[in-house]
Length: 333
Image 1 (cartoon, rainbow, N blue to C red):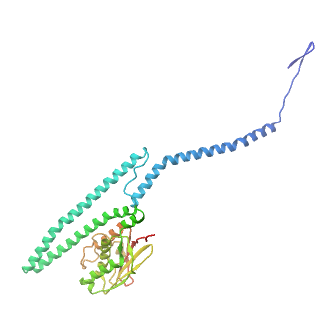
Image 2 (image 1 turned 120 degrees about the horizontal axis):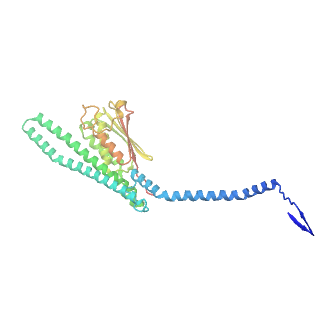
Image 3 (image 1 turned 180 degrees about the vertical axis):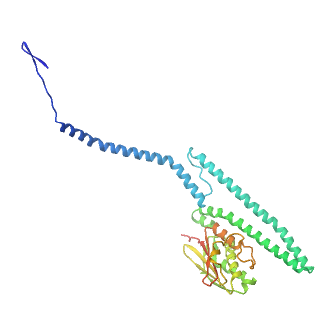
């Protein structure tokens, strides 16, 4: 730098210095001031991104819950109040459900029509058997009559199966109500009364009349099953027991979260290897015993339709045991 001092010019050098430690400290102070704000800004951005994704995917989560409700039987269709972006998907799912329901209904109607259509020929066949018996052809008449009875029993079983499956949807609809209206729509059957009526009917059959029946069932037990379906369920299981029992059939019930009904006989029982196959339609482990092989399969269908369980095992009496776990009727508040 040049400075004018009087008539003379003089060169002056000025040096300015700063301690590096002060610069470093200033940088650290700035970082300490800005980092909390950066962290807060990052948290806000992350929270905003999470909220945006959450809100954006909420309709899909609602669809997932709706599909789960349909699968569990709590609903029949998806709601119609989805956003515009998801509404086409919901409509396609509902259309698929409608098409499936129509196909099932057509199959049920076809089964019922077929069964009803077979009833008249069976009645004619039974009448022909009676005419043959009147003409003295007893052996041929007995064969025709036995064939007609077997076919009629199969037809009746198929009608029962179609009816029980159709009511599975009605059971789900009943759960959607609340309060007294819901309780009024729920299926209900008196277990002791139904059990007594079924046993009295079996006691009049050739197999049932020779047996000693032991019933251990407390009073006032209601199950969430229609009375006619409960009678069919118990009838199939008890009839199976009467066919195989030697001298005794015992029925024991226990209450709790679910109603437990165990039916035992003192017959030959079923080998452990065959227990897993029981309940299959048309399965008969011994052709010497009269039957169609549909009884336990029908019982399984009824249990499945009402959310019950059916298990097979060896009885304490030494024979075969059927254990039913049936849904109870909740008490009114």
